Length: 282
Image (cartoon, rainbow, N blue to C red; front, side, top):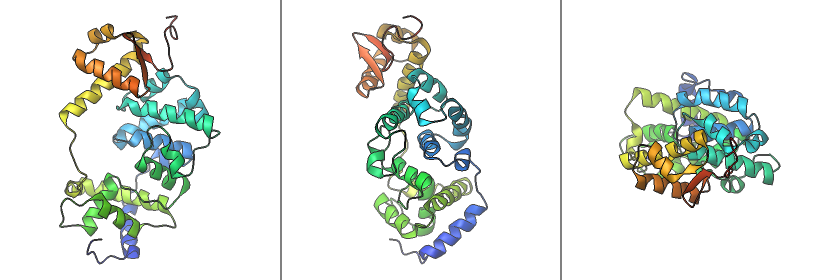
């Protein structure tokens, strides 16, 4: 713990007061059903809020329930996701919906172990779902939460590890209303980032994405988009249609197949649920 003189009560009062001045009226806050929270958390992974807002509304119109999403083909899911990037998140959300529909009777689990058994859901996403959908007093970090904690509890320190930040987050947590608390922290943190230095640079977990990783994610995403648009095809056809090296296309296909998102067999590629002949009479 830092040497800050804030008591939990003082700090919560400060954050709630500041957050009331910069509250963001986001669509997933108006409908806090577990399914709506699940969708928003997947979409907000590594994607800025302004890009998510229109996609979120369109998504719920297309797939209003877990069952509707589970029953949809992967091609429709990827088409609806287009523009958000990181297409593997869409496929993981789709796979999670199918697991929830089949194994949990269409009800999103309300415990961390069950949530983390689902594709694409790790510690942060599971706890965010618990806080926002079920108002559970869990502890987690994300960029805006870190921003507020670093500003007030570690103003002159660098390389602050998440282990310390988590202890601080637990210390100040509003256990009576964690959903309201995390909403306030995130809104105030987003405002601080607009007005001040990037406090997250002082976190030990801060790092910039390398150009190579960013480029390779693009290869994966473009390969998935090609399969959505054209259906099953040969790897040689993919080589001709994508502006990437054969090596990176091959690597992308192999990884996506290993992760269960596509089928790659004897030089042929298709989305995992769409075998040869599944679309357009093929």
